[in-house]
Length: 177
Image 1 (tube, one colour):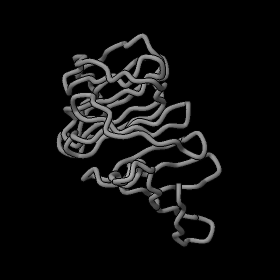
Image 2 (tube, one colour):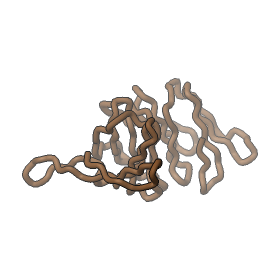
Image 3 (cartoon, rainbow, N blue to C red):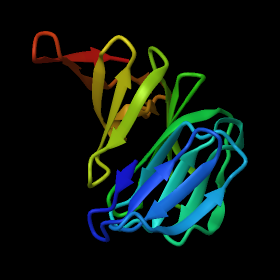
């Protein structure tokens, strides 16, 4: 479920492909059957960009009126998707334990391997940080430009730090991956 802060519309996705938009009086504004299982639903702040993580079918994109706009397809099976408030930064996590950043046009901006299969994924409103949740309760807060391995001038992959929130001790620790 997602409630658009600008329009007040409620968007919902069911496991077997049903996606619907409801108004404030629970009236159906639009609905669509995607004929694909949906791992997660992500919506930008205005409700104009709706992303559906559809495993083998990629990340499906639907506009705010329920019309399909296409799919972002790549080498992995996305189970989770997240989008920033403006709808410009897209991130997907896969069953294969990969976190992938995509551009609005579908270009892969970066990809990294996660330590475990994620169960939750979110972006901050400005698209600067990804938060990945894991089954063991661990949350990883990572600056997006730093999440992905980049090569230094010598061609070697550079390690970068991601922030790890340990909820049991309420401290922030850093892990290199």
